[in-house]
Length: 175
Image 1 (spheres, rainbow, N blue to C red):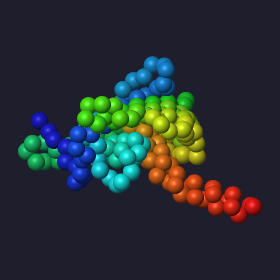
Image 2: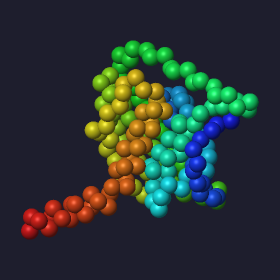
Image 3: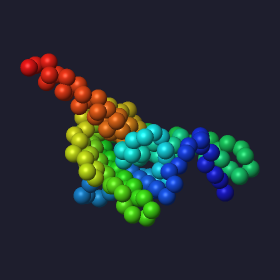
């Protein structure tokens, strides 16, 4: 028997999040790589689903597996295989509050052999986001790519107020 040792995090009461990272494209055959079911983490005032998913998955990814006896179990690095084609990663996120679905989101991206990420993300009550300009190590696993894309989406959503202000300032400067 083993437990996960993680850094301190405050959880939102009565609010859960489900994250599934899959290998493959949405609408085609998907192979599960990682699933996470747990409470939402309180990380700030924003209740953005992308930020919630990033913080939850980041916390899970940074966890260290320890046996009950207390000795650290070393994690084996995954063997690197030569990738000659594009890798596809799909991630589904659902957030529930008091057993009712509060929000849902999905992104599907393709990663080429040079690490360029392209795709799109959709979420409840949000416009579709085109994902481009993101680069990852082409040897990363699907959950690591998913985490990088979630970080990009979380940063994108958190900066929308700044982007809106800059757009208004630019329009005001042209008049």
